[in-house]
Length: 86
Image (tube, rainbow, N blue to C red):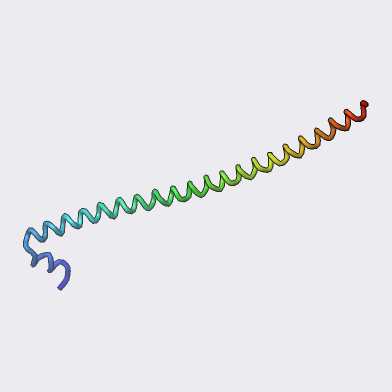
């Protein structure tokens, strides 16, 4: 028995219920398809932002270390100048 025969043997209430169920399943599949596409996009965007935030954090950390090194160097120059003037 093929699916067409099964439909033909059912009474109209069963046929109507199956058609409604089929419509609801199609709607659910469409929503799920859209949701998976959105989630995939969000996953990619989040990975990019996370990588970008990590890179920004690393650059800020590097600049912070460079600033500390420069500050230390300038304090050394200042101390040298102060000793040279005494």
